[in-house]
Amino acid sequence: MADNYIPISSWAEDDKPREKMLLKGVASLSVNELLAILLRSGSGGESALDLARRILADSNNDLNLLARLSVSDFMSRYKGVGIAKAASIIAAMELGRRRALSTVREEPMLTTSRDLYDYLQPLIGDLDHEEFWVMTLSSACRIKSCERLFSGGIESTIIDIRMVFRKVLESKACSVVIAHNHPSGNDRPSAQDIVLTKKVREAGKVLDIVLLDHIIVCPDRYYSFADSGAL
Image (cartoon, rainbow, N blue to C red; front, side, top):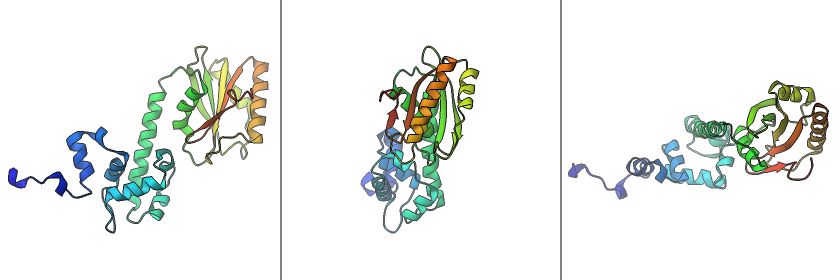
């Protein structure tokens, strides 16, 4: 055994993250090292670890930005990253998103705009297109339903107010939260966002249903109509 022992300092650069995981556990790895394991190898004299560092640096070390890259983005920007490596990274990011989603879907009590954002961000925060969602809450501020109603954006899609309140009435809720995402990362409401909010609020008054908030979800920030006094 001793004759076959190879010290860590002699390991190939590409093998170090994997060996470190086996020796010390996955929690000991940095984000760079985790990404290097997904890449498996580098290219053109650049190790997998160096390539991982460069990819993360290009995304400002922000996993939310990294999650928004497509297969073609990875392949066109990084020599040595083909469809297999790109697909592995995107699949890993999606697994992380779904794990976060399965955790927050245990009907938490949502009492603040930050609670709402933390619930909604894994659903729509990293999408490259706009989606409009309706969330109904119980009297104890626990989720009764949360569903996508429209896809394509408020500006390009006509939001049917009747469909919004159909979902509310079906869930027998007395309060509702509406939400949509801004793929641009700009969390400020548009004129259409403001008009829609007013329409939902006024329609809710007729049915004795309270619009608690309208949340605009971005990858790393959000806008709350309630917090801003716009309700």
